[in-house]
Length: 356
Image (tube, rainbow, N blue to C red; front, side, top):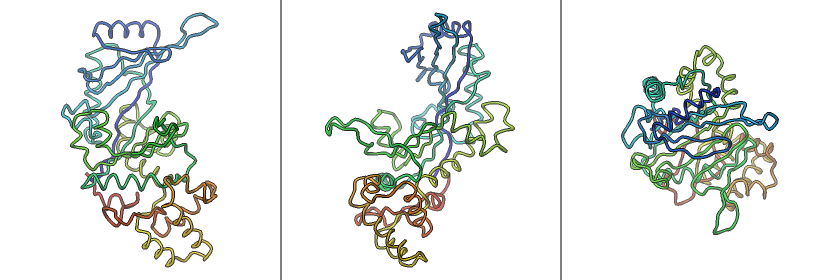
């Protein structure tokens, strides 16, 4: 199955001194725990009767010239699924777009009841996490699919996010996911079941075989999406309406990002890809280059390392992967002892996984 929606949302709101003071007093009265972050505090509402509001950050801007805080703002994090689902599935699944209107109504009602401060009035979207869940029959298939996707170098100039490996004593990519970043968004592909087990989240059994594809869009990316889908988003009167439209577009947005980054080809064994190259109408020099690329990838732990040894620039790589997309292939061959002899590219997701 394939299910696309939004996962988490961050709202931004400017407040005056009296409003931030009232919120601080309310949080103290309710006994909400907090921790320091930058020039402010984050109040943690996770697990409380907050109907989807997971945290509220209260931050200030201090003016050295004036000697006091001159500006205050809130960063409000929401998980709409938690407003309508109190079972273990809330950790494993994103909310269905059909349930989102009820979830947002519950969030607004809960905020009014808890805080009585017009908390969610005059807010703007500062981050939206779009996601698509791809459901395989077995976890082994999901793990194998991610290994294949991890090896495909991005067509766009994106920085892979690394973490410190204390054993190797160096910065390395995440072993179980593909996580890339630029100034306006992060894009990650990861197995949902192991992620939930690692973080000790309940309901991990519901995430067996699920590959989560997630776009974490910041302000600039949201502005870009507004421009692209202006006919649908411009008429929206408030952030709730915007969010409902975006949830309906989430599958289209994710698929568009996948095509821009990784191309459209399916995954095949080496023999099948070679046959498709030979049967194509490309010039002999192009076929030779494609076969050279195909030979290099199995020899390297990452696609980026293979590109370095091939001596291909980002522009040259885009041309190569576009050639592979034209014959319906991805340049990463499926290993001989794989779970199955074919995995779908993004344009065949619906045909392979079906829809919820």
